[in-house]
Length: 65
Image (cartoon, rainbow, N blue to C red):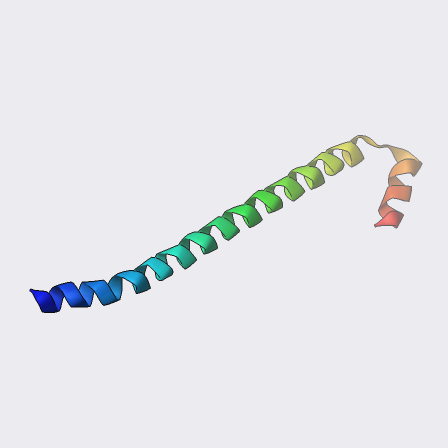
């Protein structure tokens, strides 16, 4: 039993580090997804406005891109 207790005692800190790094990575991915989502919403809003523009104004917008 002492062998198992010793092994778990040595393994536990390593597992904690692994889980912590996994948690941090997941949190980082979540932030990146939120940022990307905000950017896509902004692009979508611009595209809706551009769709409403007519004639020469639309051509000017196309040349700007």
